[in-house]
Length: 255
View 1 (spheres, rainbow, N blue to C red):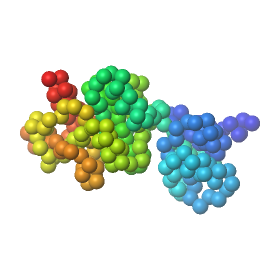
View 2: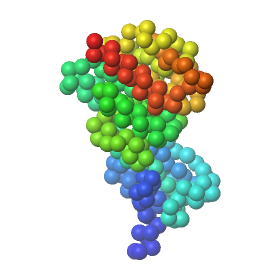
View 3: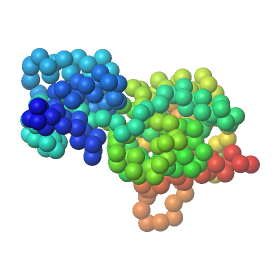
View 4: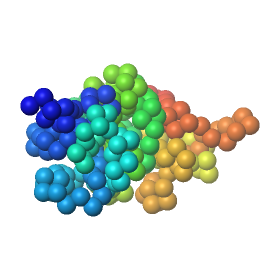
């Protein structure tokens, strides 16, 4: 029994779940799993059961070499599967819209296009809360989820600001346009933010730390805003840019 418990250990720090029994139980108990790492080429029955469960929940599955699993593992007894569990439960886009309705305010939503640094995500969620945004939307792929680091960096904001995780940002933006939202994204080649009308129902789109907002997402935006810069370098950290633009929206909404 002791050996079985060791092999199925749950590593809370980093929100990793290791071992076949522990991972399968995490799925079946309804725990939100962001990613599943599986030993590439493994045809073992219990592992295939876990893979089927992951697909049923639309979880991202990464088939990796044993060396990668060993690198991720904290126990050394991963049995060919490691799950990365969310530190917090995700909301839905409808939850975010309902949050705005309850407050009697036009929706103000952050949409994050591929933020990969957990410290940036946590800082942006903290800013979203303080700026009065009704929620944050992140994509499932090529982006960090709600890890323990994100939760810590948000300084408690995750307890109050709903975060939804979606398959396709472009599809969600089209749906939100039907709800009356306009979208503005941050980009150096855009119009100076002070010249734009950022009032009313609005979605603020912030891009990846290195590449910025992707081409397709930018095409779905109604406005492209640039932040005036007077220094010797030409870009801001993603979370800082989010804060600067968010508070221009706050300023305009207060008029």
